[in-house]
Every structure is written in structure tokens, then in C-alpha cells.
Length: 200
Image (cartoon, rainbow, N blue to C red):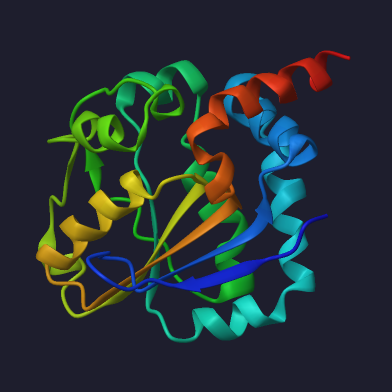
């Protein structure tokens, strides 16, 4: 399987760095599509089990205080039955020896799926979509935002801004998979490719 990567972000990014376990290729995309759209929660456990081979991620986590799952809207949770980011946190918390702060962020409105939007529209789509309801719970903490897929970083960037504004001192990103920069505008097509592989 494709390896883990690390990137330290500069410029205006609110994220100190980002880490991921896999590159988004058809096999990985099939597994992610399964737990996002076909209720195959076991795929999350399978992908997270790869952490046993990544002691570097355990070392990385020592510089942080807690995990924060990217929230989904209650309507999406009812439809899916769970928030995949929370499920990922539940699987990795023991390995990384970090607590989870599931209420650090809350989704306040449903948004259009990010997979069909370009970078500019992704940012607008997220306006007012999240809040940090209890700043005292995160004040002074170094946090790792957790989600399933990192594409342009619009969602995690918006969440990081709120956490930093609420008093967090550092926010990094950890995702199961990253869409490569050269293909990020076409990740919906990649998902559709995975559907055909899955169906086959």
C-alpha cells in the first residue's frame, strides 16, 4: 500500500503540518467509499490497523494533547449511522495515546458534498458550517484534526481556524488518505472509478 507522507505547511495555512496514511488510489478509494456510502464500518478498522507499522506517527503524536474529529451534520450522521472521523479517532486513540475531544467542533449546517466542488467553491461552501462551542475545553491545547480524506484542505483549514481562534495553540491534520495535488480537482472522478472497481 502507498506510504505515509508528511508536509509542513507555510504561508497562510492554519495547519502546522499534515500527515496521512495512504495516497488516494483506487484500492484505498474503494475501502473509503465502502465506509462512507455503504455502511462498511469494518473498513475503518482495517485501514487504521496499518498504524501498527507506523511508529513514526506515535512519535509525531507525542507533540500533541488530543484528537479532534471533523464533525458532520446531524442529518448526515442519521443517514450514515456514524461520523467516520469519530470512528477513526476511536480506532487510533489507543495507539497514539491521546484522548478524543468529540465536542470541540460542531457542524451547524449541512453543506453540498465537497467532492464536486473546485478549490474556490469549497471555501464558500464551508462558510458558517462549523462552530467551536466550548473554547475553554481546547484553550492552550495542541490538537490533531482527524478525517478520512484530505483533498484541498479546505475543511480541515476552516476547522483549524476555529480551534485556533478558540484558544488552541497548535493544530495539525491527520487523514487516512490524501488526494494527490495533481489530481485533487478530479477526486470525484477517482471515487467513481473506485465504485466501478468495487462493483466488479
